[in-house]
Image (cartoon, rainbow, N blue to C red):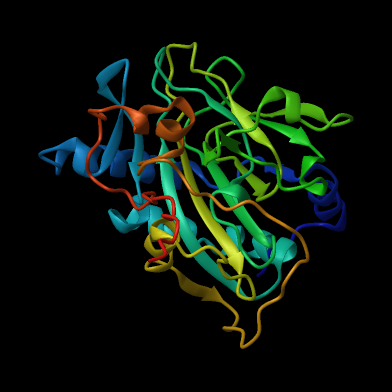
Length: 301
């Protein structure tokens, strides 16, 4: 049995740039991922090898990198047939796994995420890329659920730079007018399908509860990276075909897009947006694959 999205659900995704699916996963799958987090932490002698820590409280994990490489519970979810059926309704039958992450958003200290478009971090030949945010805890405004600028995926790819370098965020003065900010709240097991061009953010966690979120990201097989820096190389090493077939031709969208060239290497969106990567002694020195350096100007003899 297959579980495609309804025409109304597809139309809502196309209109808003995101779609909330309540109860995509059952309690058993959610509990399995929650237990997997504990197992990953318990099996690691140095958390900095697998995770990013909260600057305000290094005892709290901010993000676990590539969780689907570290535990079968996450791989099972990213290959979940119902999830892929929904995804097929959005990007077509040829589906490639791109990468994964696990945002922890700890109680009282969970970091905010500023306005950004995922596409700006990994520009591709086309925008048939979708992330699926799977809530492992009930997510509400109080603990920092996703917030989306509905319809902003129809606008341009915005410049996410400051002082000539990529900073992974869009200033409030650049946000498009006429788009309404909406919350994407949901119970544990709910999922949010997110268009790669839609502007989104999240607030700090002001509650006493976690807001953990597993995020597998996908793309259509005819979408390939157009900026092949270390970040792209890191992601490409883990890509694989999940459904359908590989494509001999790419699909290209016309446009002029800024490239994500940073001032210094960085380990995550959080570090980049908050400028932690520019510190003389950054908190995290283990590369997560996000590192990229600006091109040096050519010298002429």
